[in-house]
Length: 213
Image (cartoon, rainbow, N blue to C red; front, side, top):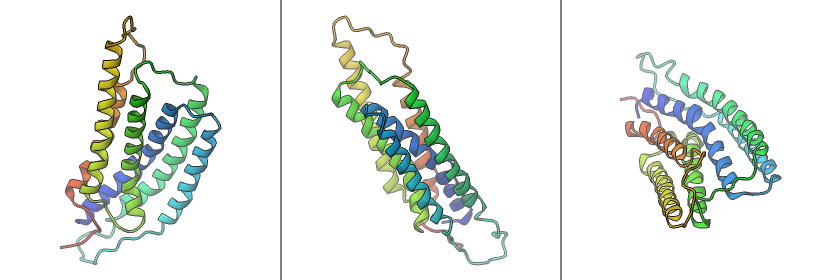
């Protein structure tokens, strides 16, 4: 993979996608309606992930010296790693505080099956957001498109099916109030498409480790 393209894809994975993953996990936990004490386990898990990311700071990808201005080719990925770790920690703390202040989620649009589909979609997006950074951190470079794309497609499909089932459930319930102040599922659809596109877009430029021609 071209070093400049590699650096750009790694920067996006570390700085943009990685902090997003903890938000999707939090959204899945809220949908499950778990007890409040489980958020302490969530924060512990994020802290453990940050410890593992600290060791990723020693990951190095080398390219042959060609004298073609590649001395700073890896600047973006290491800036992305530093800021991405800050983003992961900050997002986890802020979203936990926000969730704990809000009342328990009650959604009349979704039954148990629909809730499971939404949770599956959110967790799949969390994996799709974290996998590129993990792939880079273990020394494999940029994750292949054929691995990342199916995860994103599964998340989109589960969310779409949940929305369809929820709409049918509302229409099939006599006297159901179809007006709602909630922005769901519009916000979920928009975010899922944006994050999914951000996850797979850079991968069309290639995958693997940086090489020079």
